[in-house]
Image 1 (tube, rainbow, N blue to C red):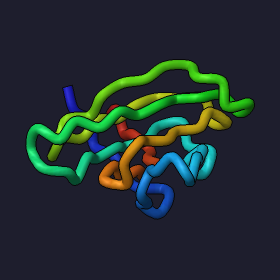
Image 2 (spheres, rainbow, N blue to C red):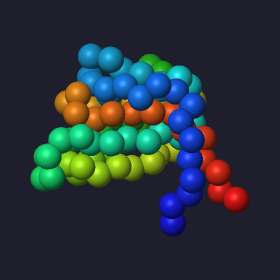
Image 3 (cartoon, helix red, strand yellow):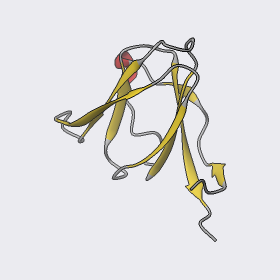
Image 4 (tube, one colour):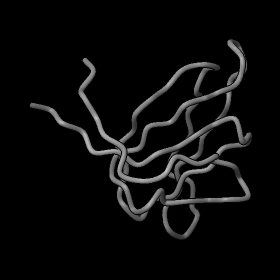
Length: 90
């Protein structure tokens, strides 16, 4: 099920050289702007940069994840865009 959402940060590339907590956002929308079939690995890490988990975002697909505000995200490729969001579940 998809819920309406609104952006609460500026969308930016999620590249390994720019590890970010996405404005301390709890929910983050990720979009892989790469071509269909261009999978990109995304890593979720704690504030100490210890990996919590990883997942793959398919090309031209989006995912919304929940994380702790201090958790950080990075991707191996700048094709992955991230924006902090608020979700309206009503």
